[in-house]
Length: 98
Image (tube, rainbow, N blue to C red):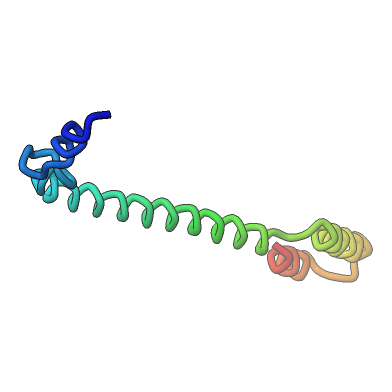
């Protein structure tokens, strides 16, 4: 390799210096800022989805809670069928059970 070729390629006067000798510096700030905003939005969206999914799973009744709820409805229906409670009491308690 000829040393003249290496020195000519490294010459900053030919317009091919670091980052195009500042010719692209304004655009690089814009694209860099847009990239940072993109990643912040993407990470925020992923975090939001994770929080929403975790909250919905936490609020959902478990199978044992669903079984207890069904059991309570059956007891209420039995008490109503035996005449231990009135229709108004049955409706009110059924609404409270949800």
